Amino acid sequence: MSREPIIIEQVFDSTVQKVWEAITDPHQMRQWFFEQMGSFKAEVGFSTEFDVSFDGKHFIHQWNVTEVVPQKRIAYDWRYAGYSGVSTVTWELTSENRQCKLELTVEGLESFPQEIPEFTRASCMQGWTFFIGERLKKFLENPSR
Image 1 (cartoon, helix red, strand yellow):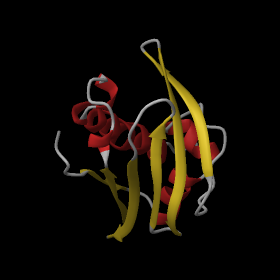
Image 2 (tube, rainbow, N blue to C red):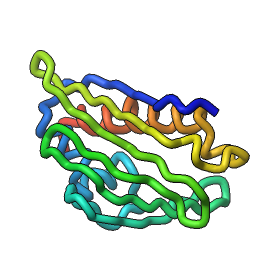
Image 3 (cartoon, one colour):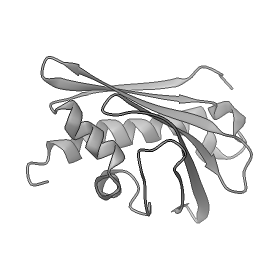
């Protein structure tokens, strides 16, 4: 498996502040990301855990926030209870021509058990492309939010 990070870039017709809120406010995150997520705080040291079921399997997500630069960057370690491996997910925001560019970087994916299809590079790319390019984009473009 490749040790190269996965990088997903997306430009939104939105302000950095609105994108920051969408990726750090738990109420908003539950609307486009994981509805099962209980709480989240953009604070170094904050940890959360929640269960996501997929194809009859349970994946208990464990996040620990490791870095926060408000409205610019947030990073957290991402583990799954009962499985080896840890990845780091980093969200970076920049303002470009009255838009917001999001660069998401996932490192350490190769540390997860590769015999589990949900942990493969292809699955991760597909999942992040869906969440960022479809779900978050649609959420931010919704005028009623």
